[in-house]
Length: 293
Image 1 (tube, rainbow, N blue to C red):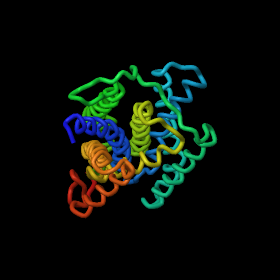
Image 2 (image 1 turned 120 degrees about the vertical axis):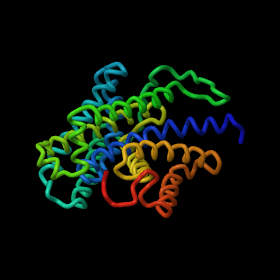
Image 3 (image 1 turned 180 degrees about the vertical axis):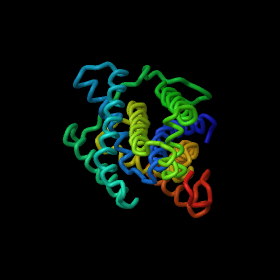
Image 4 (image 1 turned 135 degrees about the vertical axis):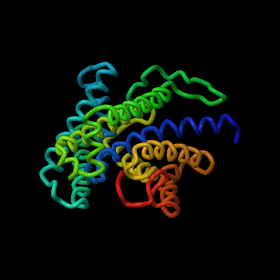
């Protein structure tokens, strides 16, 4: 294994891992506010890619307006999701709420299949397909876009949670919902906002990855599961851990495919997760206690 191959696997792993990390962030944002694992998170990723393709073909929009519109529609879907499925049963148990998210995931996927069929679709690369060679490894410009947008999203979320009243309100809900309510925070609005932000993060991840991996109505299943695995790997409830977990899983998956076989590429993520859970059940950056942070 030469240095060029190692660099190639590293670049590929970081690229895919960025999307896993964004998906994991979506899981974390909703979990911290509601205590619910949203298994429809992968469908937001799917909507980001599929709606972008749809708006380019159906409305004749350019790439950037199509992606912006796709993200806005995905955010609206996230708001409708919370408003009409989660809020009416707010007193239900966590297990019941999780089952509802699974049902919504199946519904969104079914509607997407009816609307766009079972074909796969490609989204144009943002700035051409001429590879950039670094240290013997070939990197598509889209890879740089994926990494740059992911970093920008992480910085934006960090700024949002540390500097805005809504971000601080959501953090307060993550510590103690009752206490947040007693000090005047509108908990229902924070929950709605968490679903909208999670949809935004997922849709952006789907739109930036679609030029590299194609997209289809069922792409959200695997991306959602891997995002959940990244979330657990980094430590459930830890935003930094979710992003780091995505990158770690992406890189290990890429090296596993290169060193062993690409046929087992998807299995590596879950094998790594199982091994980690045996050694450190709270995740790499999670706390040993069951308290959410």
